[in-house]
Image (cartoon, rainbow, N blue to C red; front, side, top):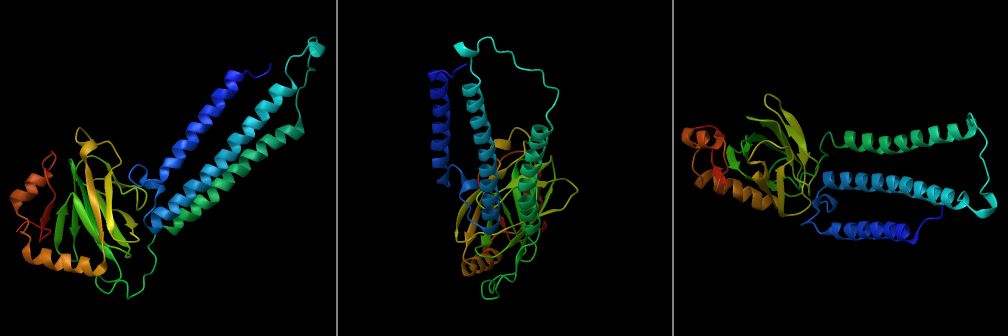
Length: 280
């Protein structure tokens, strides 16, 4: 059977659409995962790119074999009475199509495991870079319904639905939840991690340079899930230190009434800032 022109045109149309879609992936507004702005996101980006190339080679190999078979063994007048022989097995080809998938799995597994273990702990940072905030920064993240609470235990600051971090400094996020299981995700800075009640899961991220990056929930958690977003504001270490000092001096203390309102299911109209992490 000879492939029809319509089938070939459809194939090229699909490939063309895929290429156009990939061409638009560099815009961080629409595809932040493919526009990494930090070392964690960059490592994961190269892993995604590598995996895509490996899988693309597999797909191309399948198409090459497909078109070779339908071309070589298509029905023709000179072979219309051909009857293929009965074959019970072929050790050579059975070995080939068993070994090739094993090689593909190994080729995907080794870099995946290497990157995963590499990102378990943050790298060491030069003292000059972190003079304003210390060697690292720890922020406790609590997933509420449907908002994000960020507590800075070392600075005694709490923010809701936004978080400020110093650029060029690894930030340790310790995640938990007071309601349903959720997932903390800042696509431009790295992959997601679960926030679970009664658990203390960890994730570290770092921004290369100052900027604002959108974070969101990566796990459906109820009717407010779609609006459960927050901004990550990366500042220079000096600006971050100034923000900490200004917030400690001018922001209101967290009250029991404010905490009850935050823990109550629902959305907030605007971000909140407090100069304490416990009700006063």
